[in-house]
Image (tube, rainbow over all chains, first blue to last red):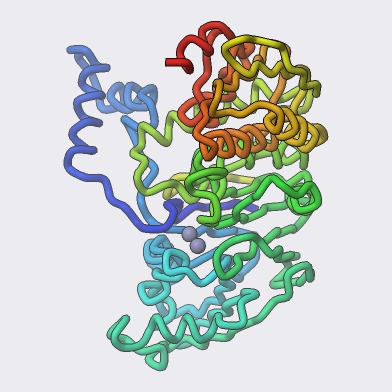
Length: 319
Length: 115
Ligand SMILES: [Zn+2]
Ligand SMILES: [Zn+2]
């Protein structure tokens, strides 16, 4: 299995500004320090050594993560604005004529997790089948509302693909196109749900828009079980721990530190920081990753190391 | 986890020790709250001597936040002093040092919080 990130930003999509690009160019030229390059390859290998925030960037699409499970059917977690490039990629790969089945798993119905659906081109192609799985009773109503006047000019009824809604029960386990899927209730305004996916001895947990209150060991134990030995946990690390337990308490999000502690307890292999704060620029996200790795190192306490990455738009992780 | 108080004329000095983690954070919070019932935080700053603390988890940090808010609500001041280097680093990564001031020593904390 592989996981590909199409949208990693929290709450609201963002885009790099002219000032952001300029500061990357200035940083790169400063690092080059007048050096001459003999070939494009030399320039490439120089760029390779620059910090990710200088030579790359985290991107700005809102939540959309693909699970590539190896079968013919597609798995997608959330339909944030990252669903637009994902849809285009699918059309480019499979062509508009070959019908595909897409399984979508919705964490919840907030707009940053749903806004990509009207721009997910496969819905406009007859023959495609879209199955929207989720635990909210209002799932179908929310999707229909988003694609209706005055929110959007194209009505839900104009979708050419067949769309089905599949209501799941948190705590239940489902076999969906060869993948075992377990949803879990999470603390968030209007509730959210995490999903654990398992196939061929590999496991992937998608857990975003999830607040951890730290005042109930049983709740923590439930998440430790949910993350148990996962090959990858995608975790809502939007805020600092201090913010998450004070000024931004009850805002429905979590922090890098809580993600690391839960993954350490669970014996997870890899943690991806996700749902990035829109206010953070690439340099701040680089710094948060570096600090997260340092925190893991100093709290490892004899355990196997936990690999920590910070998700960015376009990143693919083999499990 | 251990919490004791050390007499001081200009401050309420509490001395914490060992690990403050999931298993002990509840006890840590209860012990802090019990101490603060006996000392009016508005009358003198509260300084927690952390020299003996070698580990604090998120649950322990949350307990400190609860106490800090109670002290601030009571018009008092709180500081953490003499943190071990790794514990100090955790405070920075968690951004707790932006909310609860950290000092090199108990005397330094008292001097700065008393002004
Ligand atoms: Zn969100
Ligand atoms: Zn949300």
